[in-house]
Every structure is written in C-alpha cells, then in structure tokens.
Amino acid sequence: MLGARRAFGAPAPRRYDEPGSSGTAPELSELPQSPADKFRTRTFLVTVDTNAALQKRLDAYKDIAAKFGFLRDLKDLPDDQVIKNADSLQKAYPTDLEDSLPDELVHFSSFLNTEFATKALSATVPTAISAANSTTQTTTEEADGVAVIS
Image (cartoon, rainbow, N blue to C red):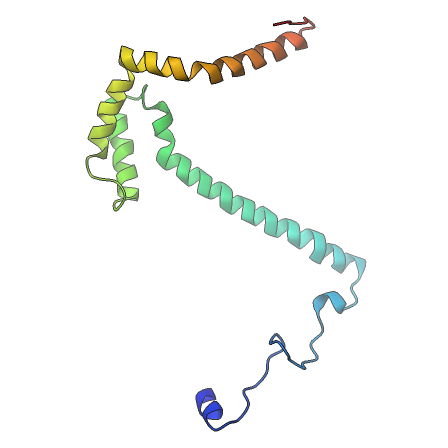
C-alpha cells in the first residue's frame, strides 16, 4: 500500500523520529520528572542494564574457559582426558579444527613432558615466574615487618 502511495506522489506518513519531522513528541529528558523517576531512569535502570551486560560477558568467558581451559593443564592431564576435551573442542568448532586434533594434542602433551621441552620452557618462562615470585615474596616479607633489599 505504501508503495502505491509513493508511486502516485502521495507523501509518506512521517514519524516522530525521522529527521525534519515536525512531530510534537517531547524528548524524555524534556519531561519533568520527580526525583524518584530521575533516580530510576538515570541510576537504577542504567545499573541494571550494566549488570545484565556484565553477566552476559561473564557467561561468554565461562563458556570459553569450559572449552579451552584444559589446554592450561595439558602437560598434567592423562591422555583419556586430553582426548575427551579435545573431542568436545573439535565438535564445538568443526569447520575450524580438524578431526585429528585429539591425537595431535596427545602427542603435544607427551612432548611437553620431555626433558627438551622442560628445558626450553624453563629458559623462557622463569623470568616472568621469578619476577612474580619475587614480588610476592617481597610483599609477604614486608607484611612481616622485615625490610628486604635486593
């Protein structure tokens, strides 16, 4: 019906939110509000919306952690757990991950337990770990009242 109106030159009905609209609908901010209404619209509802958005993000992070979290403990997991977790990860992303992922992760897990991998990891990771440990140790000793000078 609207197409027929426009085809014959009749103007389309205007809405309040269209640019150039001469509608008389007032903006919400222009309406007088009681202090309770101001609090509700400016503080309470904003807080509820923010909380809902944060909960949605938290749920997304929990989902990601459930799918990928086993990779952090790959070195210590038994092979059957690695296979089970890798299967579920592969099923979650079938177009991105190949069917061979469980076998590859079992092999990688075995590699992580070799002396070569242990030496390679200890050569690269300890700087971050030792820095974190020294900060924790210093903080603990300072809390005990002992001044630490390194």
